Length: 384
Ligand SMILES: *[C@@H]1O[C@H](CO)[C@@H](O)[C@H](O)[C@H]1NC(C)=O
Image 1 (cartoon, rainbow, N blue to C red):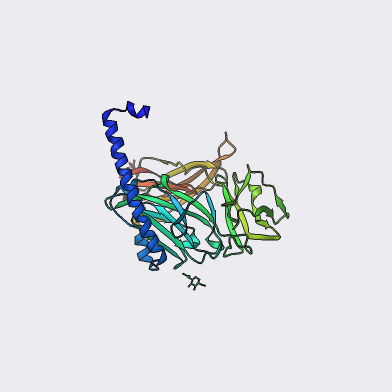
Image 2: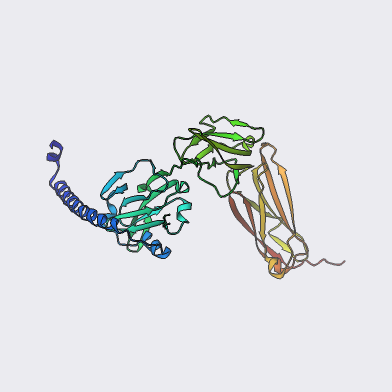
């Protein structure tokens, strides 16, 4: 109260108007509660995909409601709500009901759920969005997110920083892993990126270990080089060539022990950045009948391939592309190489005048550089 007394008159007005807004919000909340209860007894079905999409992407003007704090609750029964934490376990076969405050909001659900027509119903109500998933299975396990939308007229965007996520497990006493459609899964081990082996369990209590096929044995999981998270699977934080091979996870819970899909990990040397090519023509002006060389080069990591593509004026008249590609070690640094492509134009004609563009590309991206070449008349040899 002491601090309130110190407030100036204008601040007081703000406080009072805020209180008034709160009162209105509380009142409309109470009304909403009633309509929600009324509706849960006769759930509205929206199996039509378009209809659902429209509801998910409901576009409305920015209202006071959109600015209220997002909250996510689980609907346990008529008028019984429970605020959700980071994770939630729902018995397989049960109906999942989540209510997210906000208008409008968007949901993101695991891919398996998204693709399953009919079991998922999303209804946008006055101040809440209600997600209902019936006949749940272990495969529905995953992250469910509610994104409040920020709208200005008809433009709405997700407010990622206000999103609320909950990871929902659907435990099944017979299935410890979320089933996969294939027995093998290929995974790229990128030199510059953590790799995830997505052996997700259906129960957070399952004990999970990682195993290698050859030589057969358990892989030590130290939490630093490799770590495990029941919501994600195993993460190899800094992939190295020795991590490659065939791996699988084993989950144990009670008397049950199950193996996951096999993961074939293939090591790929990934560049740190897109190449930065440099272009250089043998001469900026060349005489008709002469020869032109345009060199494009880029320095990159050793064993990380850089591809060159060319655009040149002679293309229009069908002049074939003739290039010579070389790789030269960079003397000071053993880990780096210079890649070069030299475009060769023999017996230059007028049509070869113009812009020469080289695009250098690696797995991280591409960059183009250009140079222009002028074609000048043949210098006449003076006969003596
Ligand atoms: C849910 O399961 C029940 C019982 O098997 C079935 O009758 C109903 O059609 C299912 N509902 C959906 C939406 O799949």
